[in-house]
Image 1 (cartoon, rainbow, N blue to C red):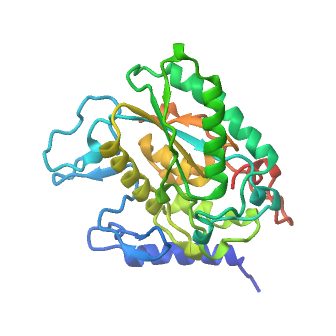
Image 2 (image 1 turned 180 degrees about the horizontal axis):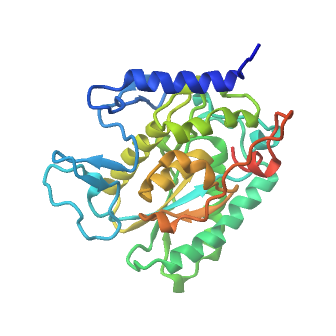
Length: 320
């Protein structure tokens, strides 16, 4: 008797459902989007990748950092407009969930103290200020001298933002001409990607989801938040920041999957679902850019050894 693994059968089911759900034009319907309290609602403007289509079906980039005004249509989505601000991703430091080796994405963790930073994580948050300062001083735009920290409401991200901000203040001199906003802003759109039925499970269960992300960025296997949904809320976040701030360097303290997905989406890559090959380490800082060549070299995930369940510590311990 020939049998297939549960994961293989599940992958086959996802592909079949994707084919069945396509409409007459062969397009995948707009995905569901999780709101700030985890409820499902239809989002008519959901983003399925780094491109949107205007009425003439012309591909346009997600964001325009260049000031070139790539789209002149008056009714075009505002995401195609030049960005007034600069954006920096900051992944949280080592958390207690990292040490426990579990996925920590429950919406009930927002604005709580659970799964905060370890002592190592606090030091990583402080150390991130040095790299952030280097990136800020290398910026081609000297006008963006106001620095605003915006954080996910999860404790590990909030504590990282505070540690980075405090250390940055100590590093910043008057000669740098940098002004650090005192208030740290909380935004639910930066919270961890929701992993549905896998929440609280061992980190190796990420391997159930990431391969399917590459195949279909709208999939919701195990009730996870899809890659497309993360892109949608990140796009909404950026557009909101563009209305609230002007000539500001915005530091976004968030989580591995959110940083990685958003980074690829902003860089206009062909397949945002490949984000797992562009991993952020704990406390790592990267500037948001609009071109694929700005990304680090991809490091594809290795398959687990036959007969074992766990991936390597480097692959998973640094992620969540």
